Length: 455
Image (cartoon, rainbow, N blue to C red; front, side, top):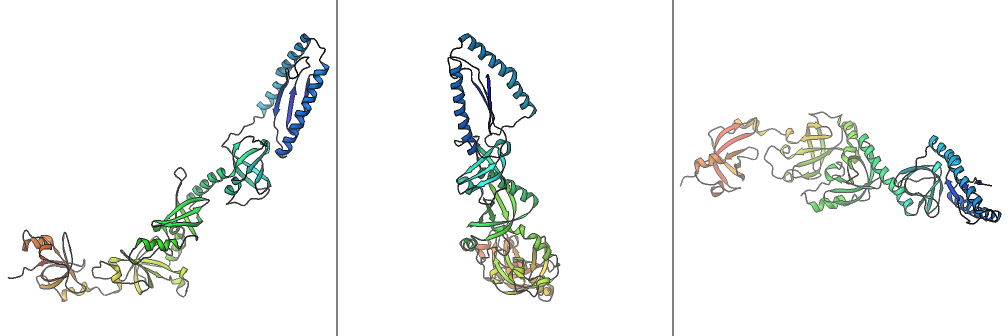
């Protein structure tokens, strides 16, 4: 007997010649793993049986060949090796050439079918490669987002071709991390809305989580429903409002994804834009709405109101929001919008602009323009009394009455007081005599010059 072939779940081709002196002289073992759906535990048991049987066979060879002459044994061994080279190895090479096998590398992502799940391990059928195992914390971390069951297809990263128990060891956590970024990029490109959970808040926005990845929503990207309205713009008060959203779920759209820097920016406002566009399509520039001041900021006031199709609704979620810019609150000059309107005030406003989901409103457009009748009150050349509202580097703003104001430019002042600064002669809040130099009712402009006091 020159060759012994033992076929099992793992096929071993064992080639050895008869010889006299050395137990393992000229033994050549070629191990090949073939496709199986059995588990590696079964394979490990069979492997031990194979080795025990192989030892027994070698002992028999030693007993039978004890009396052979050394020269004959050497000749037999040489022939066996030659036979291996010429015969079986050539056949094996031919098989491998016709059926090439790609050997996976550590770090490759493999797909397998779940065949068993326990509290601390998960077995995957990897087809021709055998059985893979995911252990311990890898399961909890990697499967936290996706509950799996037997028969499911699962992707996992190869971390060891054969661990101490004979399994192909895998990591679902690493594969899930890459798949999570792939999914985020896909949703960004498709402009799909996703549900996220708010983890924490800072003065700039909200920390969120989606697909197990941490991201950020800037305050400017919150919807009108969740935008923090603070009367005095206090950042600490804004933070208090934002922290109330921790733990809540929001519908957002992904704006920016960068897996290399682990950057993820999302927008709640963008996710609600399609719905808002549909509602806003019911509105037209020139429409007059009735609503409630929902917040006052340095640059104006926000007004919430119901669209025509929801005019009888009492649900807060049915309301849409527009902005009254500080310049559209009233006809007079305004330094602080809070001096004109307060939160919860009931107001009427005219729609003066619609840009995508932004609605621009005007309260002053519904009030009579005092400049339309200015010719009846003031004329160029008149000497009038006026109170200085504020002084800027280029001049002083002066109110002749509660609605009409003019500008006394610094160049006109220096004609009256050469070499002097306005701050040296004039004070904000004080009343002085002025000469009207020009009136432009359409542009709401009036030019003034200080009248020098007689001593």
